[in-house]
Length: 119
Image 1: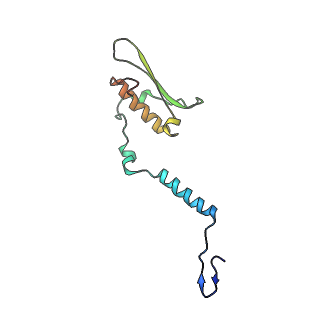
Image 2: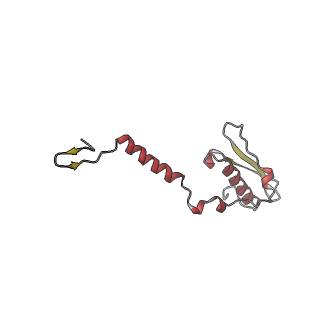
Image 3: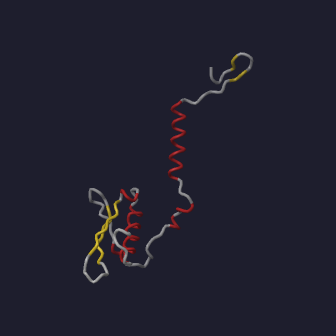
């Protein structure tokens, strides 16, 4: 009998139920997933400069069936072509902040002359 004295004063430790063991392992995994390493701390996240025009241009399309931030940017190749780019909320792990932040970074790369493929 777990937790009780058996025979000559020997105590058998009580065993955790398999459900409790499973919950403990699950909680450990979830905690590991949500722990942010110091290298990923918010102050180290790259973003567009605070005074850049892109902060006023980009908006979320939250009413869409797949919420996203999309934009068109004119290429600087004298051909007048425009590039369409989109970052989805799902692609940014459900974070509105990161969706916009990633879109701003993509805007900066495309505005700097990078191709859509490079971005």
